[in-house]
Image 1 (cartoon, helix red, strand yellow):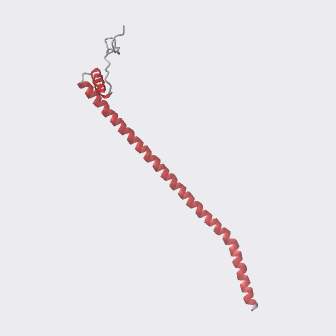
Image 2 (spheres, rainbow, N blue to C red):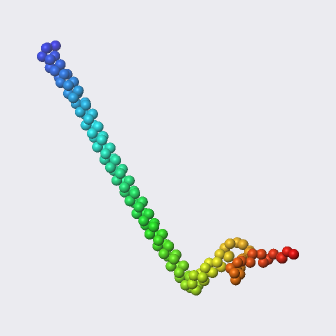
Image 3 (cartoon, rainbow, N blue to C red):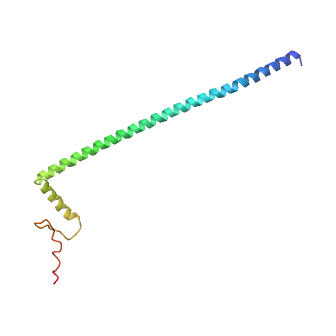
Length: 128
């Protein structure tokens, strides 16, 4: 082998090894920087998604609250109409009481007296 060729190959190997010794750490740094940027973008996207989900839950709860208020207003208006048709709140309460008598499934009906106390044992014979 010629000495010039040997020197050229040796110089090429020295330069290549030097370039690898400098380039590999630089490549590792560059690769870690790209991975860090990707992780940052992923974290920002996850945070943005979490914020959007929280806003959607808040809007849904606000709409549910509005629907509940509207339902309560409707019930209140319906109760006022029925109470007015039955002669006021006392008539409405009396109507509700009569309606509940058929729903309780019992055969005993308690009738209040003038003092507001019910007659509890009217069907029992008097023990002597």
